[in-house]
Every structure is written in C-alpha cells, then in structure tokens.
Amino acid sequence: MARFDVTDAEWALIEPCLPVATTGPPPRRVRDQFNGILWRFRTGSGWRDVPERYGPWSTLYSRFNGWAKAGVFQDLMDALIAEAASRGQVGLELVSVDSTIVRAHQESAGLAIVGETLDALEQALTEEKGAPLPKQPPVLRVMRRRSHPARTTRTRRRARIVASHGDAARPGQRLPSSADPEAG
Image (tube, rainbow, N blue to C red; front, side, top):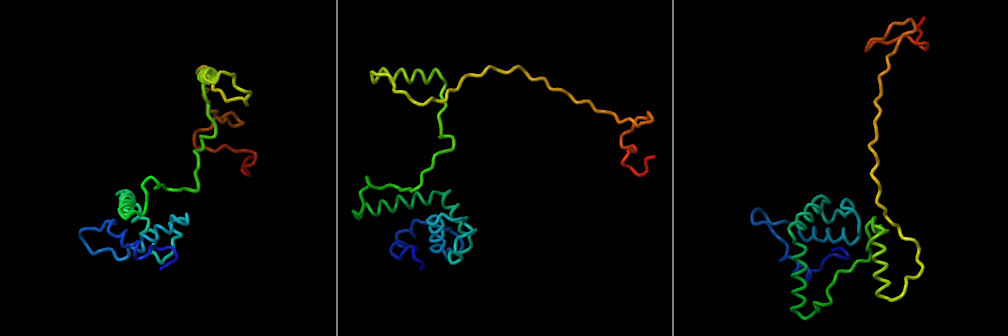
C-alpha cells in the first residue's frame, strides 16, 4: 500500500458505492484502480504518468471516464457525507470542496461595454451615491461600426505564354527558355 492509498476502513465505506457489473467475473483490481485515479488527480499529472502498480493507464482512464459519466463520484460523495453526518462527524453547513487554483477565462480580462450602456451605469451609480465618480482610467468603449461597402473582388486573368518567335504555347507544352541548354 502506497503512502496516500485509501486505508481498509476508508475502503469499507467506498466499496459499496462503486458499481459492479451484474454479469461476468468481479473486477480484480478495483481498489488499485480507484487509488490510481486518486493518485492522478492528487498529483495533477497526466494519465500516462500513473505508476504501473495501479494498472495500465488506459484501464484507469476508461474506468474513470465510465464512472464519471454514470455519476458514480457524485453518488460516492453524497453517500460519504451522509455517513459522516449520521455519525455526527461533520456539520453539513461546513462541507465544501477546496481548490487552491482558480483560473478565469481568457476573455474575462476586460469588459467591453457599448458607450450608451456605460453612460447609463455611471449615471445610475452617481444618482445612488449622490456624488460624481472620481477620475478613473478610461474604459474600453465599443462603438457601433458602420457597415463597409461590399468589396469588389478582382479576378485574375490567365496569361498566355508566347514564344519569342510568335507561336503561342499549348497547355502542357514546355517552351524553351534561356536557362534551358537545348534552347538555341
């Protein structure tokens, strides 16, 4: 058993919540696979980096993907919270999921507002507070663009290659050039 693998007591609570197929042999390494899935998310590494002691990475991914789509992890979380609450070990108002990294979407860096909307918001804020807004850096204002006239597209004409002696080249025919040794 590795350092952060689930203990026997924890496994006794988790195992009944994991689905088992009604037909076929029971899965042999469900506990190892569960520990491998936990290892992957605890370390933040890729699926291919999961240690071999948990089984093939593709099996772990397939197992996780199937469980996630079936809602097994949500059911497991609900069952564990209910079990802890029945034992009086946790207050449900304190249950939360913590994340040390919260990232904003790339488009959340700035807000573009149409000028009339921004003016209305500034006026409403001024009326509510009773004082004008202090000097602030300029805000990006989006102005309505006038539609551009239709662009005319120019068509290219095919140039005909004409030999120096006046004969026009036929398609697929190569004309002699000055770089050609046979040109004379």
